[in-house]
Length: 168
Image 1: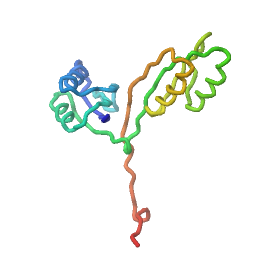
Image 2: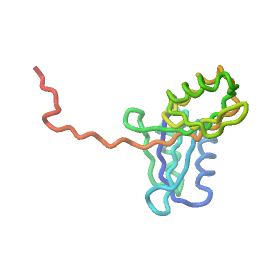
Image 3: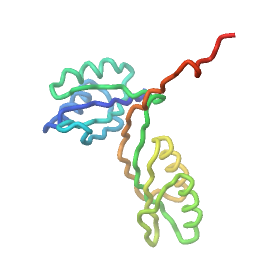
Image 4: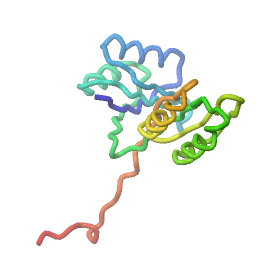
């Protein structure tokens, strides 16, 4: 089962290597790993999608590392997850209109048009990108690059008394 973790770390050399090697040594498969600066100076945020039936073990191992500051699991229902993909599709002149119409359904933007292919940029939920890839494969997939998932927790919804259902 894939789980998504947000890991806040000190922005120091070697942190990424230590985290990825720890997960590999423990036998956890990393499906996606994206790292970038956070809103806090000197800190970075890692979004890690890992295949782990028992996530508590992963979190305990990560907390042992010196540069790890905070770990949060991002449940799908309580977070927003997105990926970026660059996809090049074989596009002969007679099929270009059909391919462009299909791309517009997924908000895929053409970023490179060549004689024999069109390159698209697609951003969205990982499932949405997978659906687009599946549909354009019939035309011939020339190249595919994915960024990996990035995710953040949703703002908790406040419930007031008027929103509660009354028992009858």
